[in-house]
Amino acid sequence: MSKTYHLYISYSWLCHPDACEKKVKFLEKEGLQYKFLETFKTDNISAEPIEVRMEKAIINSDCLLMLAGVGETCDAWLEHEIRYAKKHGKPIIAIEPWLSKKTNEILKDNAHHIVQWHGKLIADAIRQSDQLN
Image (cartoon, rainbow, N blue to C red; front, side):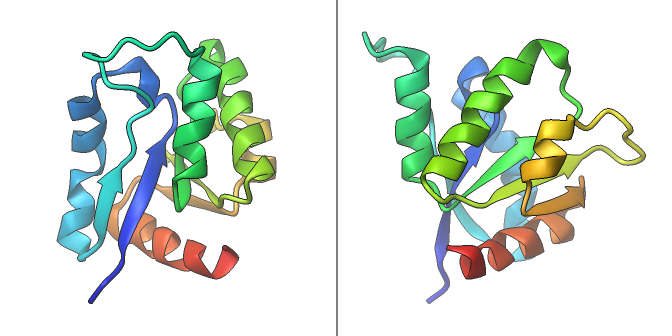
């Protein structure tokens, strides 16, 4: 029986869970079973700060998929996600758009894998992240 990977996607708390799920749906074509970890459900408003909900999701993840080149406005949140990943020993996979020159230096310095936006490359990096746990 193959493993189901619990994935945390950077900035997932900014968009509807269905939108994040669509971002990684192509992984099924690579034979990778996964569960997307929601930072919070939109129908369940929590009194907990976003940082607490973010850390809880990261704790329960197998690895983080960090979307590179998103923009400077998200850099502070990216740093929170990286800090929690390091604190809890979670591998970080940076996913760069093809020919991107905008990848955040902090992300580059902390990523265990840096891959281009291609299903096989991302699936392989997720599978390899098991060896880092």
